[in-house]
Structure formats: C-alpha cells, structure tokens
Length: 140
Image (cartoon, rainbow, N blue to C red; front, side):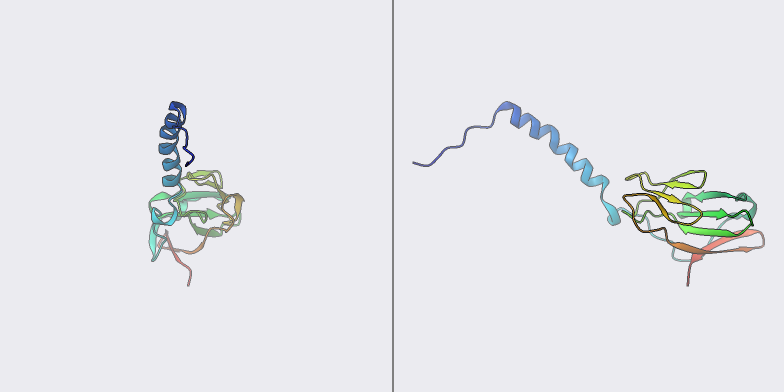
C-alpha cells in the first residue's frame, strides 16, 4: 500500500503564499548586468572645471562618472557603475560613493573598494579640460 502524504496545513500554504513574492523581489533587485546602465563608450562633456573643489569630488549621475580633484589640483575620473552588479551609483558623501543596490562603497579619489560586496575597483577614465570644460572618456 503506497504511503500517503498528509495534506498541507493552512499555515504551510499561507507561509508559501507570503514568502513567494518576497523571494521574487530579491531576485529582481539582484538582476545585475541585464538591468545595468551602459558604461561610457565615448567622450562626454561634464561641466566646468571649477565645479570640482580641491580635495573634493562631484558625481555626474547622467553620465555615470565621478570626478575628483587632489589638493594639488590633479583631476581623476571613474566610471560609477558598481563593479558588483553593474548598478549606477547615485550617492556621493564627501569622496565616498555608495551603491544603492547592495551597499558597496568606493573611494571617489582612487576608485578603490571601501565596502563589499564589490571587490573590484571602479574603472578609471581619462579626463581632460578643453576650454574650461571637463571631458571624460574611456582610457585607451
């Protein structure tokens, strides 16, 4: 005689119904590269050089670029697509970039990871000033 499984309790059915949508949200949030913005693929004008203070940084969300300036006045630029899941980074606190997807943090002056889950640094970009306007582009 075959063994019969007991019928699922009301609690088991309700628990499954509640947890299924929550699990689905987690998968959507970790969509990664499919939902990611495209990396910079050509030169882009960012704005006046004067927008970036010494020992400071400015985030250009529309272009997924951050530009920092050292105390000596040297400009550096980085792509702000998180190296963990490709999410566009949309928050800059001082010189710390914070990814909204999983909380990775990066140093805007070096591109280095300050907080995981990301482990790879941000991609460096070439930056130059033409007639007072900063132009960022992928490094050759």
